[in-house]
Image (cartoon, rainbow, N blue to C red; front, side, top):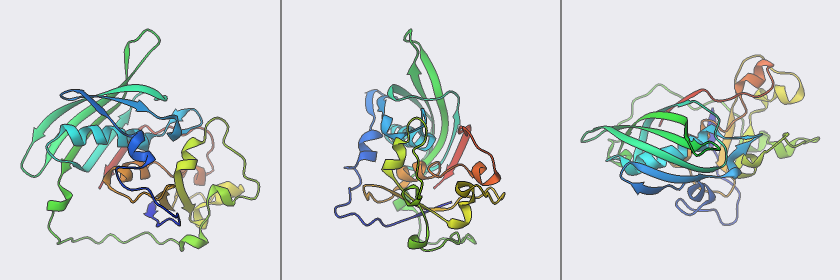
Length: 240
């Protein structure tokens, strides 16, 4: 569970002019087909982060569909992605007046130039600004200590870099709830929970696309269950 944080940066980046926006940019090659360059700046160990990949595909779908805002999006991760060129192929499944549905797949290339499907997505998009003000829910924000009582990787006294790439950590502002940090001290709680304040390191405000990144930005909940090692994302569903 991630909660948005306001970051103490002098000149925060703006939506549309930030590293996240540049690194999730797509170029329309032809109707429904988009080229992109997956940035090494969003990798952990040796793979590109699943939330970042979802945001890249989400941007392509926002252009391909009649509506611009993701309402729900589900992704199945078929093979590990790596930094470098990729192509996104989209298809409009249904275009309605207030809701549209599309599917997309992201492909990369093997050494012989053949396309390999990395991710397959099904999503529904709408217009958030057109929704009524009436909101009825029993959901409550997560109980989490104030920002100054939470901790990030930079607060560890014996901070050691992750073997391989930890580039994504430099682009995120994460402060974890101490109650979910037992794994870092060798004392996991066994509850399988992870909570944190989340933001982008350059101070860019949150929007629907950055929320697609946020859902896969925290350390794996498996760590608090005493499990260690590589924890790949197999499937991810986001409700905005």
